[in-house]
Amino acid sequence: MAATGPGERHGLGIRTRLAIVVVVLVALTAIVLGVGASAFVDASLRDQTRADALRQADYDLGVLIPTALPDGIDRASLTASGLLETFRLRGDVETIVDFGDGDPVVSSFDLVGALAGLPRELRPIVDRGEIGYAWTSVAGHSALVLAGRPAAGGPAFFFVHDASAVDRALTQLRIALLVGSLVLVGVALATARAVARGILRPIHAAGRAAARIAGGQLDARVPATSRDEFGAWAAEFNRMADTLEATIERLLSAESRNRRFVADVAHELRTPLTGLVAEASLLRGELGALPPDARRAGELLVADVARLRSLVDDLMEVSRFDANAEQVTTEPVDLGRRLGALVAARLPAAQLTLPDQPVVIETDPRRLDRIVGNLLDNARLHAPGAPVTLSLAQSPGAVTVTVADRGPGAGPADADLERLFERFAKADPARPGGSGLGLAIARKHAELLGGSLLAAADPGGGLRFELWLPVTESLPAGDGPVMGGRHGEPRSEPAGSPPR
Image 1 (tube, helix red, strand yellow):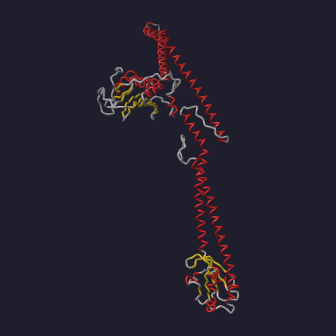
Image 2: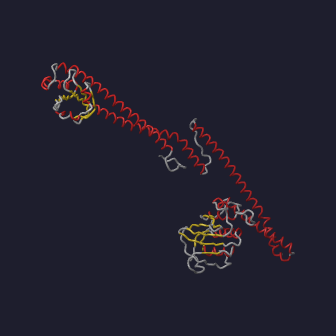
Image 3: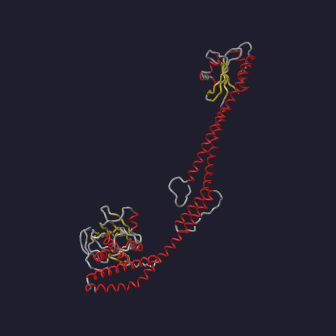
């Protein structure tokens, strides 16, 4: 079967199935007609041959033999009459004359001993004075044998008619029918494929158009080349595509407006927020001098300003993603030292597991800090007090950074886990803290580094985030191991060392 383009499934296509159905129907029709025609011609030829032979035998037994031998039939008179030669010349008939003594008279040496091989059913018919016939084989040839006695009585005459011509004609007919059937099947196959190709052409065109639409080419359409059902279907498909294009354009426009609004809001908030941050810094320095009630209000104000600043920074970063304004700057990074510094700064209680040898890759350290920092912050906010582990593993061509916690986790379904990476998504909306942008920003940074960030539910409870980063080239280790130990043992990094 020819290729059908996008969306094709394994197995027999419609074109092949249609061709098979047509060929099977034509083949069955040809078989039925061929068998019927062969049987009809076979019966007709044999009936005609039998009728001619019966007329000839009736004339020979009723007229010719009594006329030639009016005084009775014996061996001498039969041989002298030349009747056997006359039968051969008149109708190409060989004759066996049975006198009942076991020594028949034959017209040809080929018939010597043939009497014993003739069907036994002929004897009772001959004895009743009737003419019997049988299709049999005589001297290795197909033959029609008629048997009877002359009207005046006497020996039994067996007239042997050669039926080889009938068999040859039937054989030639069957060969012709077989060849004709094969030609008919070939013509049916070619016709079915051509018809199927014409019928399926609009469907293939629709498949190609759908693939182009799926690839983002929303102006792809199906040409309506007829006024039949396929033409109406193509028109409906095009109307659906027009509606889809208009809907997507409206959605893109609305999304663009929303992103622009977020960017504008974040930008406009930065100026007053700068003042608020400065004022909050001044207030934080004077909190100890305030009365208890006022001190609590001041602490809440300072915390809220800090969260507002974090939210605005996240919104600005998301706006840069939407504007494709982010540039990746790579340099050799010792992942062990980097991760140790991040754990010390963000979540000192986390357990860090590193390989025995330093792992140095070419990456953007700022984005790496942002990804791992957001994952640690997520564990600190959503799994407070629960054990958190951060591990680094190296494989050919890649490294994997895993952050796992034993917190409440998310839903077990893949959709629940993927929703964690949506903007403003939270596993527990009622839980305070966090903007819902941290994981979305972390995944975007991972994609900019050529890697990926996935979430999985641990069987024992909690969440596990895996950051996969490619290693594009082998780099020399920039620093020696921080702390020796057997392979697989956790190695603690010195707290307080800032990331480079």
